[in-house]
Length: 356
Ligand SMILES: Nc1nc2c(ncn2[C@@H]2O[C@H](COP(=O)(O)OP(=O)(O)O)[C@@H](O)[C@H]2O)c(=O)[nH]1
Ligand SMILES: [Mg+2]
Ligand SMILES: [Zn+2]
Image 1 (cartoon, rainbow, N blue to C red):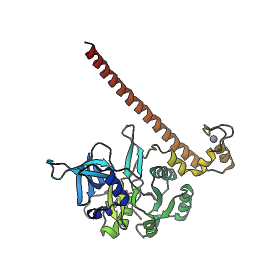
Image 2: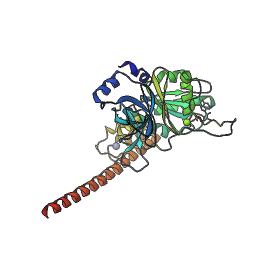
Image 3: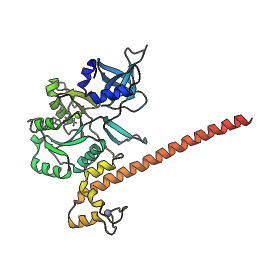
Image 4: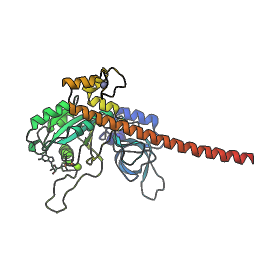
């Protein structure tokens, strides 16, 4: 690793990335990490500081490792362009609402996802399962944080309930107010950490608490109503990557209103292992678990071995995943048909020109 890349180690630069860079980098480009993306531009941390760059052709997202090159004689001084994206170790993808045939990448190269859920009100188990499926699918490790434990009435019941629906994941009760559970949370966070959850879950407050050692002051705007300047509520609008203690980085995200399943079959299976195991025992390999004879899922349900709510949640995510896959297949098909038409038109005019 070259000496002048030490600043990049704060952002997670390591020997593996260094090797990849040496192998894949276009000439005259430097390595960097995308901190945030806005309107075709991005902020990229490079060895010498942070530069603005044009995003280039492929969709980029916060957390991407890229190569950049300075644009000579650019009207904007020191404007760079992204020349390539290094292979991602993980990517958090949801179905895009924009009607494209691809999913939308929320963040790349994330090691740990904190699923923030406020524990001071009703806990939406289905939403936690949805975010678990998204996280398992991404390749990152999920940690469920039940936030605002200082304001919760039945925190131990909630903990038990959430542990039961999050097999394989760490579940913690935390409070940024009293610091309960914060040291344990800090200890289980590894590498690049993304905090996901609905608006008001306490994501930015949690991020500020984790960053406090590094930045000394609140770095991110939270939903706290500011009394001094009467400016009211401030909420996170962009995804931004910030370095913090132990060579880790943190991505605070805006509240996600919808997180549709996208190519998440494996993630869904990993979220519902008890259902997944049963499916292998169904008599028919294409069993829909509705009324088929020899259905292991239905008999387990009848015996009370699996939870009806879990099964409904599983079905909902499966249906959504299948629907998005079919929709994207249809779009891809339409795009391909369009391309073929264009090509055959070009061929026709080519031959017409030749025959003349
Ligand atoms: N009592 C209590 N309130 C909290 C805690 N963490 C966050 N809050 C409050 O929850 C609201 C939303 O917090 P914020 O971090 O902006 O949520 P975000 O939208 O997920 O980023 C704010 O009013 C916070 O003050 C906590 O640990 N305890
Ligand atoms: Mg926020
Ligand atoms: Zn079945």
